[in-house]
Image (cartoon, rainbow, N blue to C red; front, side, top):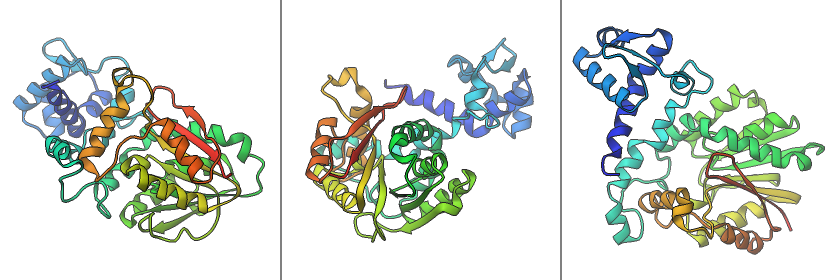
Length: 327
């Protein structure tokens, strides 16, 4: 555990320098050739390549280097399954700098940083919007599948996506249902990135944008579906209920609320570690945030005038999708 950051650093360097991209185009190659092609020092490249081989991210016969089977699919930018840019999210310097102050956050009961996840127009959210779609797409498909019986025969489907980030959740719904229109709400600097995703997904003409703070800005009307994705864990129970109440009030009769995020369960933390480790990030990065339990979400929904939610698990990811009707 003490040395895990070294492995992360080796992986980040390999991605940022383009080692995997170059090996995917031509292999095998020696350290000198790779260094020349990638504009690096030969000795530095050799040391990095051997470290990558030690982690079994590449293979070597002692002189030449190649990718192991399946590596190009995840680590080459030319692959449809490329996941390398998630280093800007999961292994970001923003998170690492925050976690360096974990002991201080524990003493304080919340972040001790001057800039953090709740800071207006925090620049991290631009990286999140740009690079997190890879991990959002499977969850967005689960959301769209769960909405299918309710949404497919509706004449119209107006969707409000609060703190939309990359916008993938709302835009996936719009892709699935041609009658859907999306209102993406976030900080203005984030909406510039979301607009590019809307364009690449072919739904830009059915997308509208609302810039501002989701606790204060006018939502601009009633909606059939309000999405709150990977957001409520940034806030205390009280603050989360406040936002959920605002969202419920923006629903038309017969409308739905959709929540995506981590939830804790009754299982011991060792059997379900991801949400508890994510709560640590919320501790160092927000004033009062933490991952809420599924039981607590059910109480929130009831208190905010919503029906009992249906819960949908995302395969191979620690996220859950909760959907509830307006009572």
